[in-house]
Length: 191
Image 1 (cartoon, rainbow, N blue to C red):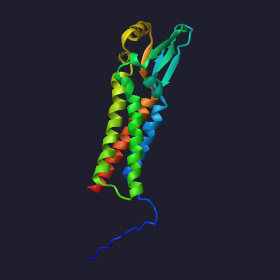
Image 2 (image 1 turned 90 degrees about the horizontal axis):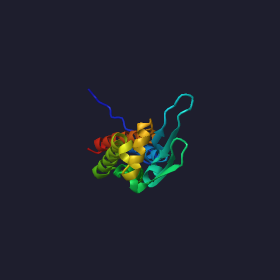
Image 3 (image 1 turned 60 degrees about the horizontal axis):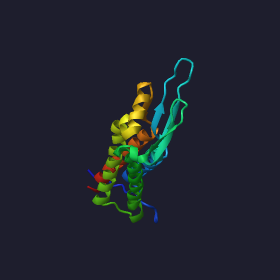
Image 4 (image 1 turned 90 degrees about the vertical axis):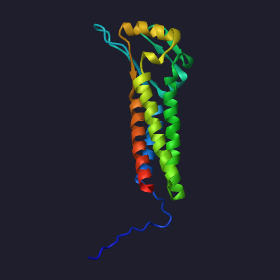
């Protein structure tokens, strides 16, 4: 039997784009976009004929502090120093999203992807997942707040206020999963 080898030639000057690096690029872009989407939602229930309200805050708001108006009262200022370490998670997702984009472009520019770059791509995807998951499952809720703010919010929570993770957290988490898969594919390609 005679086997035939089929090779595909690349056009001169074209950039090699592996599926892994492309997925890391897409995952990084999703992680970056997530920072500008809502990360935290305050919702009040509908009471009789009065509609409930919902206010969502972006990752930047959560990181730097924000004001929320509850039940039509005066705005409640929530400075960053009255929030737990979980407030850092949106910024960390943003930073590792940017770094993920950078390390996804390196193989395209240098026309090669070694094990260290592929391992870093995998690591950045994993870190994005971890930071978004910490916020989603441990930080997005009343435990995000400390001190007098936590006490004040617990009174409103007893009256029906809910505090939950918003869409930006899930977009960041999805971006991390896509980047992790891409990093795994890149690592497989160079092994």
